[in-house]
Length: 115
Image (cartoon, rainbow, N blue to C red; front, side, top):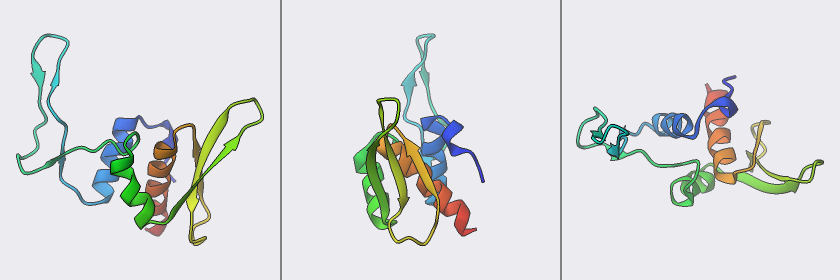
């Protein structure tokens, strides 16, 4: 199985959009040289959503895929969120400090497990 935990948020966002079959584009951003950077995807593509940090983007996936999120304290004094299958059909789990990132990674793990 792919180690999604080592991926950046942007890589995870792209993988989620690809898994959903969406055509996406990265919004233009100012570059450090004073210009703008644009993606090379067609104009009818949607801007890439930030599944790792936006409840509005990740919430419908969490609900639609019955992803169960729960909060727990860890042994060194911090906390984490864990994502797992709310239906109990797939015995995988993903843990992260960010609940939306945990759910996005778990969604990708679910898709890979279905193949």
